[in-house]
Length: 199
Image 1 (cartoon, helix red, strand yellow):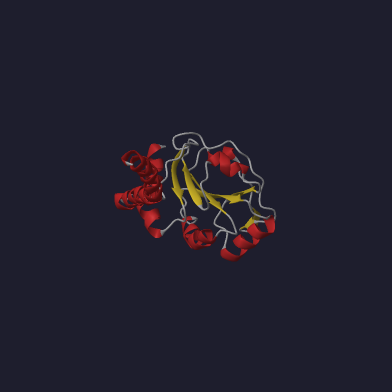
Image 2: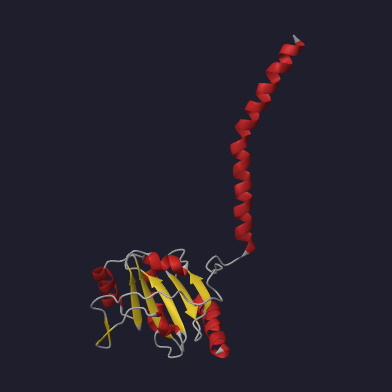
């Protein structure tokens, strides 16, 4: 009889392990998330494989009909990165955070130390045109990435994202998510200053 009881206990032990397995996995995941939150790391600063490397050599067509100061806004030409500091902002008319950060881009466009370029991600031409007509166009140049392939080359995680390209055409900084007053003051502008000193 005792041998029979021993056999019965083995399946019960296995069953109880399976019952507690989801709870154990949940506890491990909760501990990982708690550690990430407690670390204080800024999730908008995500390492990019492009930082320290040349900006992707991709030419993109213009958003048809887009104008600035009465002149047609050209598409994105990587040759334009050389010789001047450029902020490349990835945006879409369908992107709510892009609308939130847009007034800050309009302010940044007033800074003559760099030019602001746009990469219009997975958008219809008429929607991009309406977006920039309604909210204002801060961009000196805008490339239409209708199929999203250029964004893949840039290593875009989501929209919006902003890249800083130095006068040498090298990507110096990347910001993921909408820019804020704080991120501009604490992260972006120091990166711009460093790019100005480097070249």
